[in-house]
Image (spheres, rainbow, N blue to C red):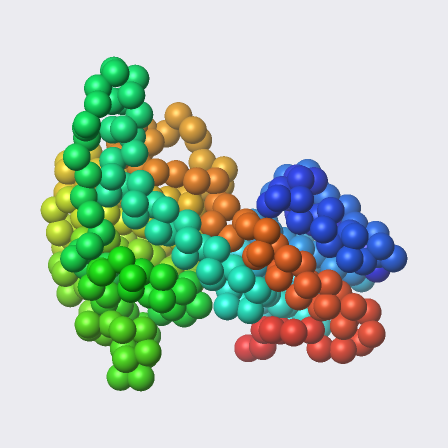
Length: 316
């Protein structure tokens, strides 16, 4: 089978090389970027961050599987794929070590923002010792927006820091509240209450029509002064203009971003002049996560080759 990897050859820690070594009998090709022109001659597409429309699907006659190397399928027209009898599958964050890796980066961002990592660099450059003074995580309130695999992994790892944990899920329940050690759990209409209570707001929910620009002018106005926003999910959850205004006006204390309104973002964007800790969409790019993802992707390519249903296939 021929597989198109819609990304540069060495993206995501050498994922392509890893999957090639797992399936040496298959032919893999990297597109070199995130724009797909055609899938002609390919049976499998690994879209990464690329948009996959009905027109893209129609550009080839042999496509059988759109297999994401992660959880996000917001750029794939799943309905169009199903209409064309093309399988669509992902690798859920809690099935491969990805959620744990993303949670670790989230905690790194919390600590970096709390201890003023940018201020530390300025102090060292100016040969100043003993400053800046940071904030401890201990005793602070962390609001988890989304309690799926990443939210659960964060809750498990944050409890030993002595923080108060609160969260939101589409359908709140007592079992989740107890299992994750939450002091409070709300539903999708309780975002403002979570924002008002939280010193850290961490976004770990999927992007959908309902959640797009979840963090907007009104949302930022509800956050505690000096609180931090961390986005580990999708850039479309946050209005870029509203975020920049909130940072410039001091409505929030800073932001941690692993995902952006456009990818890659413009490094000269004014937003990076504010208190922003940014990473290049690598929250899930670790040795443990990549090994788990490669295992699932390889299994699904082999399943489709045998005429079987892939793992974690999407249906409407």
